[in-house]
Length: 394
Length: 140
Image 1 (cartoon, chains in turn blue, green):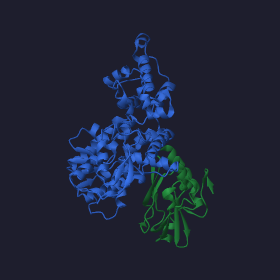
Image 2: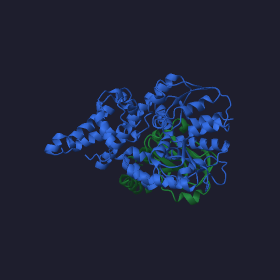
Image 3: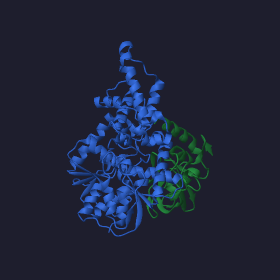
Image 4: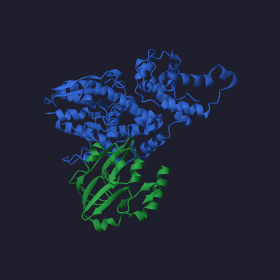
């Protein structure tokens, strides 16, 4: 097993794990399945054994032990059964950056050829069509056509100060088309000069990075950066927390990057958005890539506080401890049952609050929660914050 | 008629993107086939064309999703959408349970019926087509 995909810090982190088991109390996968093999501690112990068998004292004397196909398959299953929610790393007493470690291990496994075959389709879709759906990339703005009453430029202007980067899921999956539609309505009413990239927008690269295919994501990132720069934009805004986080961590650009919750909050503070009073009891679900990954817990709550009549009731686990909805880390592609089990736990916590609506700031969380709720015939209502803002706007 | 384990009623016209059209005088009912619904898996959301909208043969006019898959709804014929199956909003799984009956998608008034029907397939034309589609999907 080659470890070239892991950084020296990650090798040290693997060694630093004391097996204390603090991560087990928080890992949503372990809470659900209670299998040592797929919890964070179990994964680190497995990689430790691999490293010893390849580079330990006995390996130095007798040569590295050949890893069997079965061992690698099992290890691959362990590493990919994870939503990359990052809660294990946040609570780790010895500060192991576990989410980055899991991605590094996925890169090692991709190099060895031991990864879920579903990712070949994902890779093909992204590299050939430049989006996760595999549909024609020119169809990225079909959600816009359904809006009606559009200006002639259809927001695909040559130049604009602000670019709205929509992301693949909200562009293609009809369940969440209301998010970009709502965002466009809000910006229009707040008189923001913005443009869409249309067919020139490519996947941000996040699904490939999460699959362990970072090298393939580089082409996507270079392209997106180039088209945004060509528009002369100084700011890019995102409704997708994963696109936002990927741009922030991987793109290394001079462009000002804002998640829509930050952007709308500043519009509220500038008086460009105001609200009518409407009574509703809501709870808020923190998306992993917005909360734990990007540290944005307050902007969405500040928006909710600014809306008269909106009462926020927190879930048992919220903020940094908010449980993943099950939709992260490409888990739905490889183990839909496990992903749904996590969503069922989330729905339970939502119901316990007695809220009429669960509000979130991520399209994938909406899809995961609503799909599971429908299957279970539970009549809960999940709204993206853009939808709630638009509904309550004066 | 059954082809490779998929059901295809005899009285329908079939579009190459796996949608069916049932012609009843000057009204056409549209839905997706048993083959497509099985391939897609459990449908969790459908976006249908709005009532009054004009649709064009072979052009997308809506979309549907299931888990990690999303696909477009293609109009098998040109015309104006007269009504949509509102039950699909709350129960999109009707497409899986009853693709040719309760899972219908929309009804339309065709504008070029005679001219366009010739481009659709009848059940007798389907066997080779479905087999080639299965091969194509296997290679993907």
